[in-house]
Image (cartoon, rainbow, N blue to C red; front, side):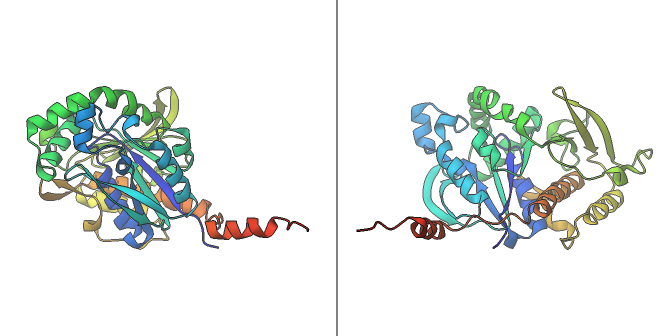
Length: 332
């Protein structure tokens, strides 16, 4: 019997960094061990139909949430699915693809925490929560570079989507185990922050978090680049971890080495395999992003260790044979 997959859910608004986080985690864990599911593939309508109907892709009524729930259950128990595909480059619905879960399943999208059924099949839940002015910068850069929009079109679409973002996307934050908020220093505009964004992590007690005291042993040093404190988030206790975007390369390397020591099941990968992000057509590196991806990897491996004895559900065919065998034969 193989073990069931560990399922990570990453939720955030459009252009909040879901793909960037997912790519780094995949490279750290190893692409051969990871299956990615984008819940935005479950849109009911293509881009032309949405414009005609006056509905945004952020609205639950624009998505097959019931099919998503069934597929997440199958992923959770190691079963394959025939997943729909939405082509973001031209806004069309493409041919579905057959997907089989590997050891780790990363589920990212807009509405992954929107129902209790979806949430119950996720082992680790992460919400990406950048400030809106920063997300606007990211979305304009992405959609003008990769999706052929003009800046004014992107801004108009964001304004149109804002009511649904407020009602359906941002409320999902309360269900996350970890909230990740990249933000520029107070004296730097979002347009000028580049790779020097700080990251603020809310670590809620819904998960056992690693002992991070070794990361702040030199907290008195202003160059340490990391700070940990206990506080309250929306009235609930939580640990707050702040990683400075301008942490020196030397200190970031020491921090990364310390975290790698807590990941004994993994061989350290090269620095250029994680912590990278796209700035229009340029690939740039962020130490704060790299450290965030390593900490998220810790939680996946912790869950993998905790649940390693839970097997896959038997294949459907095997269940059918079992039910047939247990059905008493009628006597003539």
